[in-house]
Length: 158
Image (tube, rainbow, N blue to C red; front, side, top):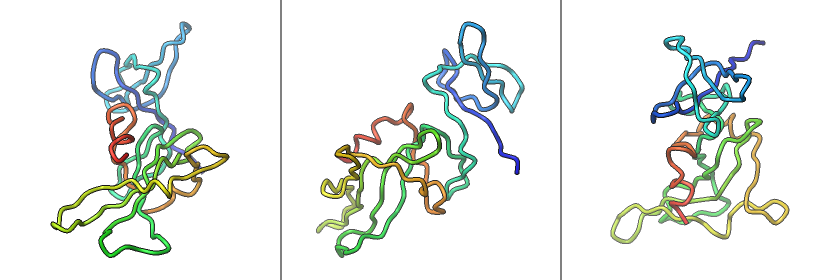
């Protein structure tokens, strides 16, 4: 079984992402050789992320550092809540670190709003996060951003 191994990183001096093969010089600087044009780009090491080999429901590749949304069904439901979902970050070695549970609410004026369900935040050993091994294999998973371009998504629903 062959696994596609590739990386992405933000090009130094540019807001653009580069996708391809990860390289490192003797000084420890990170580079990516693009699979599109075969040029080599110097990238910000903190933005490097490996491809998980998985795709989201929109067929978008899922990389380490992506912020994902995953719908779930609660044990009991509220008729005003039209969607329940988890928000998490893809971490090495390709698990989803769940950050919080949320819901999409239809209020009295028929306006949609998002709500972070504080009582249902994942906890493990007293810490507010949980690593889900199966989330990347759920066909409903959706990439909604990444920690480098969209850090506000992790704070948005507090």
